[in-house]
Amino acid sequence: MYSFMGGGLFCAGVGNILLIVSTATDYWLQYRHSTNYMHQGLWRYCVPGKCYSHTDSIAYWDATRAFMILSILACFIGIILGVMAFIHYSSFDKFDKTFAAGILFFTSSFFVLLAMAIYTGVTVNYYGKRYGNWRFSWSYIVGWVAVVLTFFSGINRGPI
Image (cartoon, rainbow, N blue to C red):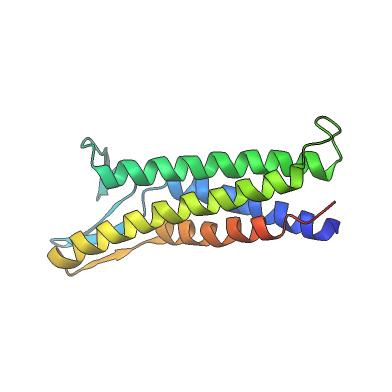
């Protein structure tokens, strides 16, 4: 009974760390321009030796950023509720903390899935038609791993 809860909290903790890393880093996409590889994230794009902030407010970047931040917040609040349930914190006795934590983990999984789907769709549609030498990078892959971990943390919330 507690092993499921502990496993769910572990998945959520690792998933939340991966969400933060994925959101904060600049390696969502790599592409070759002339002879140099360049990379970009949700907040900055980098050319060899220097990085610049995205100054344009492009809708798919804004949507991806917003859903990633909402996912991080939902996962973090779910972890707090899960820890409170795990240690039998007695405040709000009628409130089922494990169920609420599971719902928050599923919500986090849904938000990050939306963010990844939006970014994937627009990127493949734009770069796939215009550029031949591009690829998704490790920050993007870490985001997809976070989808799986937050989903499994919602499944493994376990009863008390």
